[in-house]
Length: 354
Image (cartoon, rainbow, N blue to C red; front, side, top):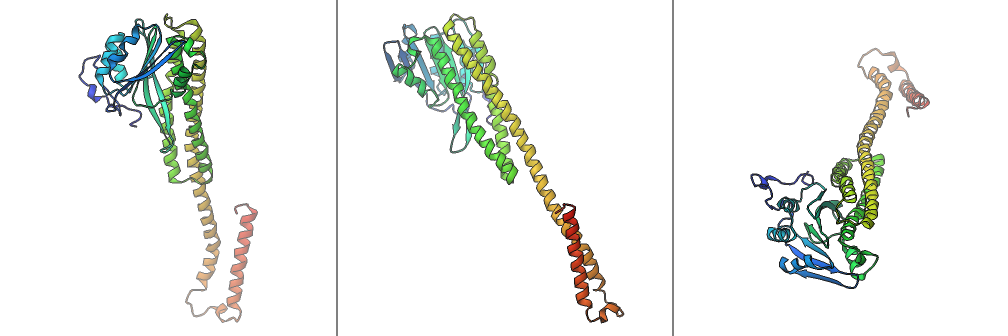
C-alpha cells in the first residue's frame, strides 16, 4: 500500500506552487550533470552548482540537464526561475506522487513519466518519477535517485551512434521517453516469469506461502497499471501536440512509442486477468485437495463401519452366545470381516470411487 499512496500531509495548508519535496527519497543528495552536444562535438560534465549550467539555455547546441535527487528545493527553484517554469510545475516536479501526464506550457512541454526498475535480490518492482521539461534547445530531467535506464542513450550520444546528435531537443525528449517505455518490456518479462512459476506451484503444490506470493503479484499488477495506464494519453498528447517545439520528423517516432505503450497496456491487462485467475485456481486446488482427503477418510470410515459392527456384537459380554462355543468361530468371524472388507473395496473400485 505504501507504494500506491504517497504522503501528502506535509503539503496541508501550504499555498499552491510551494515546492515541497514529497516522496520516500527526499533526503537523497542532489547531483547535477549535463550533456551538451552538436553533430560535431559532445561535452559531458557533472557540476557542483546549478549556476554552472544556466548558460546552456542560450547555446545553439542541444543540452540535456539532469538532476538526481529532489531534496534540494533551491536547485529546482533556480532552474525553474531561469528556464521559465511555472510554480505549479515546480511543485509537481518535487511531488513524486504525481500521475503520469503531459502539459503544453507557454513555450515549454512538461512530461511526467514513471520509470520502473526491478530489484533482482528482493524480486520487487521499484517505481521512480521522472519529470521532463522540453524547450527549444534543451531538456531538463528530474529524478528521485541516481541510477536510471538512460545509460545506453548517453552512450549513443557520446559515440554519435544513430541520428540523435543530428536532431534537436524534441528528438532527445522522444529518446528519453522511449528508453523509459522500452524498459517496461524488461519488467513485464520478469513479471511473466514469476507468474509462470506460481502457476506451476498453484496447480501442483499450493501452500499458504503461495497465497502470499499471489497477493504480492496482485499488488504489483495494481502498481504497474497505475504507472502505465496513463501513458497512453501522455504519449498521445505529446505526439498530437501542436507545439512548434516538436518537428514533423519526430512525430513519426512518437507514434512508434505510442504503439509500444498500447502493447504494454494490453499486456498488463492480460497479466491482471492471469493473477486474478491464479487466486481462483489456488482456492480450487485447496478445495480439491480437501475433497480428496475427505474422500479417503470417508471410504476408510465406511469400510470399518460393518467391521466395527461385527466386532461390537461379539465383544458383548453375554453369557449365552452360541458362536462362542464353536471351535472355528474366531476364524469364521475374521474371514467374514475380510470378505466384507474386500467386497467393499471391489464395489468402490467398480464405482470408480478409488
